[in-house]
Length: 233
Image (cartoon, rainbow, N blue to C red; front, side):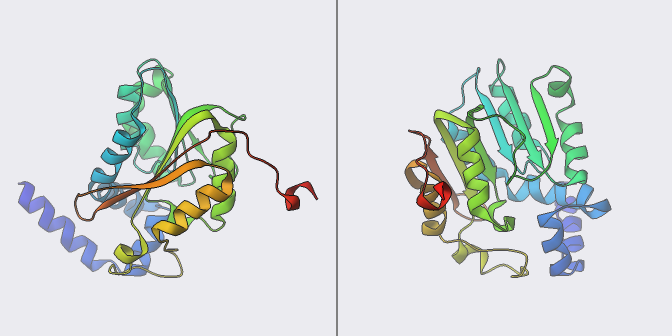
């Protein structure tokens, strides 16, 4: 039965044009977004999400934010760890908000999970609201990534940790993706974005997995970000 499911799933993917899949990966919508992309996200992101949880080393009282929560599976898994904390997420896809709300129904009813629809470049949270912050396979779709990282820096508490899970440019170039939808980043690119936003101890962690090696850019908010000359002017 599992083998049949995988064969059916692979066949459906092959029948959908790569550009449509690329658009759906960016912002799932309709039947394809709700059903097919949920299945894709849960399978393709499984190892990367597990690595992010490992990197964050969550505690039961943590307050956590995920940018681009997709199907909501990682949100649910983090909420199972942060039993005395709160896990919040933001995603601009209506289809994913509905799916993630269903997956996290019990946690939402208990006030342990809070999901928001919106853009990661303009977060609806106060300064220094979260102990940990993460995002998995979403950086490719950020039109102005520096704005996203500046916002993440703003809402993360002093001493907080950020983990950005991604596939680097070398991995992504081997996939059938629409280059005008996916922005590809090297490991150095991601580290540079984090450093420019004010994060400290920026480094890349990696772990063998399927279908690729998982990369996670890790950093901390050690001190208050200094205003640059352009920001002052």
